[in-house]
Amino acid sequence: MYNAFFSLIKRDLRIAFRHKSEILNPLFFFIIVVTLFPLGISPEKQILAQIGPGIIWVAALLAAMLSLDSLFRSDFEDGTLELMLLSEYPLSILVLAKIVVHWLITGLPIIIFSPLLGTVMFLSNDAIETLMLTLLLGTPILSLIGAIGMALVVALKRGGMLLSLLVLPLYIPVLIFSSNAVGSSMAGLSISGQLYFLSAFMLFCLTLAPIATSAALRVSLE
Amino acid sequence: MFKSIMKFIYHFASPKYFYRLSGKLIPWFGWLTAILLIAGSIDGLFIAPVDYQQGDSYRIIFVHVPAAWMSMFIYMVMATSGAIGLIWKIKLADVIASSSAPIGAAFTFLALVTGSIWGKPMWGAWWVWDARLTAELILLFLYLGFMALEAAIEDPRAAARACAILAIVGVINIPIIHYSVEWWNTLHQGATVTKFDKPSIHISMLIPLLLMALGFKLYYVTVVLVRARNKVLYTDQNSGWVKELVKKESETSLV
Image (cartoon, rainbow over all chains, first blue to last red; front, side):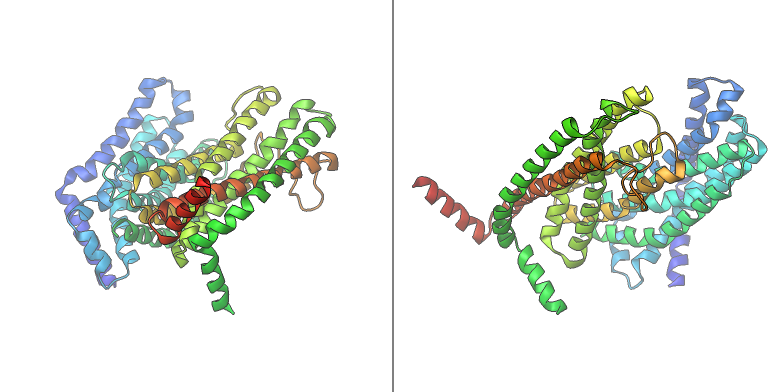
């Protein structure tokens, strides 16, 4: 079982590295969206520092959502997904491997580049640290919940808009607690409550989302 | 014991039996709804005393609060019946879930609209980004997502199952709505009815509120039965009992 899990991770990573745009596009999207806000609102330091955490988090949310297509789409089109359903290994384990890869190629680059964006949004050093911490806890949730939505719409021709309607409402708790944590650490307040919530939510999603995703995949591929 | 219960449930859930039974029940529920809503409205609008702080404008709670309760209750019904449909493959449960969604969305919308009408004189703004309001708005999005997913999938069986999964996942949102008052504790007034020790609402206001709440609930039952009945007829249109029914109906209408 572990073999299947790790070999699937290896395979998906290899595919991702051969289509570098799959890794780079969400990252560029993330950076461009954040860049738009100072242009659209104001370059003033105080305003940007205040809205920065929320903007960075919204951009991360959208980047994670728009990259969900890479999770199942190509495997669905060439029939690999169907073979995974038929394989002897539990589907939820295979699904978890795909989600892990999705996080590695979209969530991780966002975390690595977030200090840069935090700096241009004039966040304090503490706040940048918290931003990275919340992204570390939060982006796996985005991949996990997003996988459920993607599994529901994978067989539909025009699933893109629908996916955002399904997934974004479920992302809201993550957004609230994460940007609140970053804002609080800017103000020098304690952030342990928000981090506890995010960790609990992540573990909760980690246990249940693969099961829901595999149930959804079975429905979609029927 | 368990077997006989399941047998009874399957029997009740068969489309033919459901169609007959719901046809008998709908008038009862309909009349009860009408009586309760009329009594509740008269009591709430004319008899209940004026609030010492909010004046007459508080009376909108007799619509607002039951609508908000129903918006959450119907989502729970959707998720539960969706789960029943997934686990025991009872078709009727899927029908109930899908016919509940538009009603639930309507109640959510009603709660939001009445809330903002009430908020204008009270808070001085049509909309405030308060936790409970926002959570109710998210609930509306969840309903819309459910309906959009159902509309997007062509095969009704697959649509029902996909929607059931979505509803179960979305149920995470219901406790967030409920506990958001404590979590974010902002502008919205705290719960006044369900406090465990003693409700902080006066009994003369509580009675019309409960009358209206019960009326809303029965209204939902009536409408969901009507909608489910139509859906059952539509999905079973090629089966024997529907053809027989149509034949009988056309004969009686000829006489």
